[in-house]
Length: 214
Image 1 (cartoon, rainbow, N blue to C red):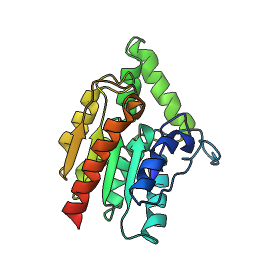
Image 2 (image 1 turned 90 degrees about the vertical axis):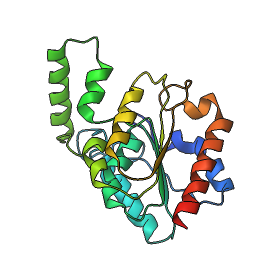
Image 3 (image 1 turned 60 degrees about the vertical axis):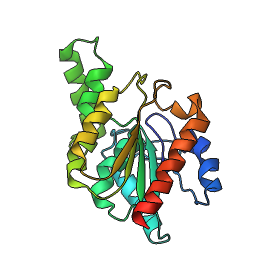
């Protein structure tokens, strides 16, 4: 299951499909709510809050059809998967690329040069428009999950989400995990920088998960 980032749609994950098919894995990818061709009954993106329900729905669909399930998400997609992780105990492995810690820190750090009174107003308006409270997030969910191998990927050159936020998330997780923090590649574009190295790291993770959970 491949989940795209905010502001995009399922086409953003197309670059990974060939790799997973070559590994003998079927691929499911879809538009998150309020993205691409998906309906938008509420006020736009919720930064992982409602998107985590989409992730859980995808998990339920796959669990009824497959014995082994892997998930990969980037940015909002990664945050959605990490948020839903406590509800997906039979997931075999998760790849989280440049996730954010929670909605508030994402906005505050993205607008570091903007007056704080304006940032706080923006946070409130975004929550009100999107009808979400921001409590369903990776930071609150990860302490409730364990046992599922997670591969954290984050570039030190990420211009939107600081690398330290993934390190913070790792501190909250008590399950098996590995990490890769390359020094090149912008937000959601690490694969573009070096596809071969990215795929080697993915293969190493998937092989280790097979040995761990076989």
